[in-house]
Image (cartoon, rainbow, N blue to C red; front, top):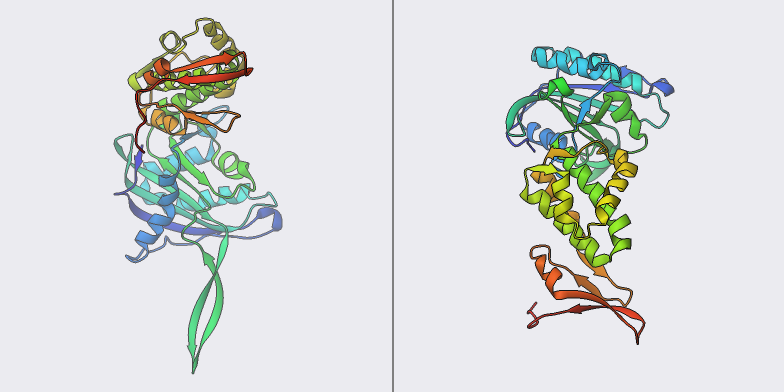
Length: 352
């Protein structure tokens, strides 16, 4: 979890990069930008808002040989070792970005490099580096008095409601490649920002593992539990799975399977499914890991607890009291109508 509420922008350097394949230039400012009181709250909201609105999927700098060969890891480490060097290093960062800007679809734009203090991540207060890029220009109108009328002037500028690209590099977990958050609103070349410029991989912490394993379990429910059982059992299996994650601090696969799979015949099916699909979710060799509560809460919000029937009827199961579905909902087959049915027991109807 991050908290940027008390974060302070210590310095801001602004440069511009063009598209190298179109022979556009690079412009490097000689001095950092002097932030005034009026612009600070606007620029903070522009930089930080996207990170408050998206899931915290962390990345880390990576290299197939050694981290020291990752250009951005070295430049970030240089700044963290001497924060006064941030402006000079920001020029190197901008040059590095310019070297990656050779795809014909990549747009020119301004690059902002900031040094941030008082950043909270995982209940630790650390410094961070912010790197942001604005690409898309928006039209806006200015008005000027001309004798007896107002003159309308069409201009272009940056829309402060939408950041095009950005990343926050936290001075945290350096040995693993730092923890990094990144956003990219313009998907015309998804590899440009993440792979070519930053060169990052997913940060495989408890948040990553919890999300990946729950996604794997969800797909197992859809691909195996549903065909073998029915929609009700698929929904209840996912509910038991999320409840297991919610009430435990540590995941242990054998305990998990014994607790959530009512049908023991599905246990070998689960293990076979993991052998076939585990690599896709980066969990092929994982049987134990710490559970991230925030990831469990996110997964529960996205879970579907509705059985949609082809007779235009929906049955919504209550995840707060799952035992009700176990005790009071039964599935059967009507020979006369040649149709399945759900039998629901209740004492009285509740008022809406």
